[in-house]
Image 1 (cartoon, rainbow, N blue to C red):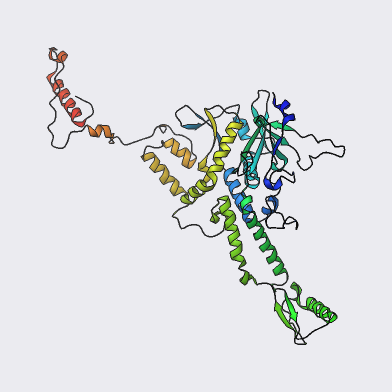
Image 2: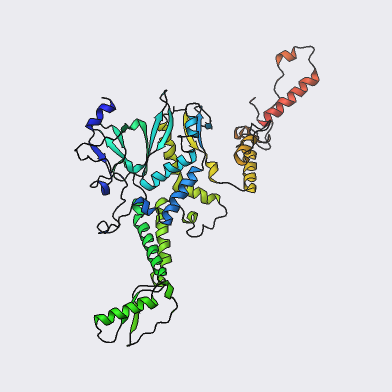
Length: 461
């Protein structure tokens, strides 16, 4: 049965628990931040969470760092070593993924969709040969995963909210494509293997708390940094008298225009503040805690987004290694695997990010690293020039160099022990004994060389 004929039998529509009853598709609402928040219209959406500085900083930091890495087509000759190459079938789409995006913005869009919504959906376009020649990152809120009874996976595209029956009772048609025409990269799947869960699911409350603190602080300072309070009279007063006192207080002593004015109260009135001051509420510590919670959810070291000082390490490289291992590596590996499968690359081809773009070393560090790599025989001079300085090759620099006095362990094992009797000289070959024209001086020199070679263990007797 073809995939077009199977569309009529699709039954299971995957959605997160918070959106099952609404039918709004995945990641429309992260979760209810507090009991009763839905009734108060206080639900937290991805676009709302992104307005909090810590969330935006983490998402943009990861997306920018991955976007600046050079995406390469690599190949292997079967020895496990991947080398950069080009191919007319796949290199063009890696340089220009679609007609309106550069490869940098394409990668940033891919990673941002995954970090914010937990899922990245990329639609493939093919040429007349059936080769993928364009890739389009879709809006994850308008894509729905469908599963057929036979286990086939399909993706429904279009506006999910508008895809309801019209007034005539007819369903609005939306395009459905098979999984072979989509690339689906997802975060950790907590509820279903085809539904990724965004980090906002875990840090949404922290983002809401930080936004609430900032909103309250904004209102606090807009009122002249004076907390609200009550006027207390020593005895009972009428409603008219209370209204007159409140109006006079608001007009003369409230708002930013009345800051610094002296309040004169008669009738033994007493002012009692109600809200806590910024010091009592420890706003700075609360904001720092919410930001650190968001950073831990995204696995971003806080110092990278200017939250706290960096660790007291000797250099930048250990910090980058920690950031790469805890945050970027899984995203990069998943990106490469999904792209390899999406482009339908043969086993000897693959895609890989150039990790040397992750850190730019200073001149002294680059020179020392290149010097050590060449002296250790790990890199040839041309490889070190290209890796650390971006320079072209020079004549004679394609081979690694090593000092000639180095011996292998096998050769050193064959050397005689100190004080041992050297072996007797090798017998003269019979053809030399029978040769009347043989030079005795040459024979003696030949025997001496052979004896020395045996003593050095360069070959067996």
